[in-house]
Amino acid sequence: MVSSPSSTTLRADAERNRLAVICAAAAVFSERGLDAPLEEVAREARVGIATLYRRFPTRASLVEAVFDEKMAAYAHQARLAADRSLTEPWDALASYVTYILTQQARDPAFAEVLIAPDSGSPVFATLQRRAFVSTVLLAERVREAGVVRADFDHSDLFVMTLANRGIVQSAGAGRAEASRRFCALILDGFRASRS
Image 1 (cartoon, rainbow, N blue to C red):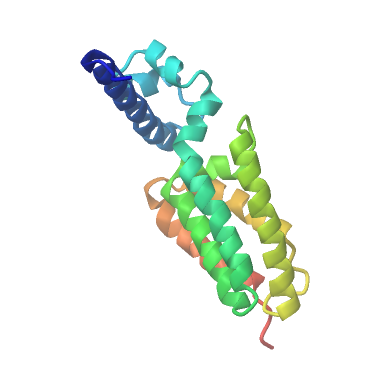
Image 2 (image 1 turned 30 degrees about the vertical axis):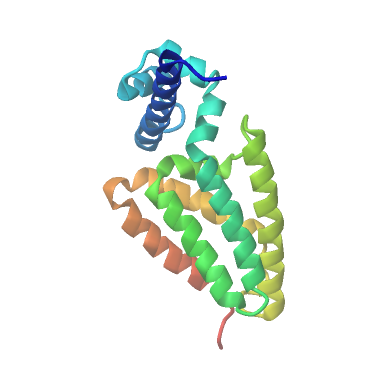
């Protein structure tokens, strides 16, 4: 069946509106947090609130659309770090920690998603489970390799993301530098003593 020009135009307009809402939500969430009013997102996207809700019936569906690629990349990086830890345990951990903290500093809203990824999103819950399995493996391997403190635990990585989220939220324009400093300190704290 051949589409009429008007239906093709309507589909193109709908897709344009959907992308505009996603881009606007990314900007608004980054600036104001995940609880920002959706009316503000609609204004930023230059669409009506009804259009926003037609495309994204819940806040969770909009958050999922905004962060699905970042969450998939996060799960992938965790898997890569676990694999790399077989041959380069310290470098695998250091690269993974640096990646996570940098992503949080670049996007404060992602910092929020990262600490509560399964809130309303089955996609994020699945990705988080994959990342969890990989980071548990990573933690076990670096501990067995002796490159981290003997008491290093997988949960230290979660505590690290919580702490960095606080830094990102409170440091304002200096969040990238504050997060970089925290990264150096936390890696130094994780590393096995050389004495």
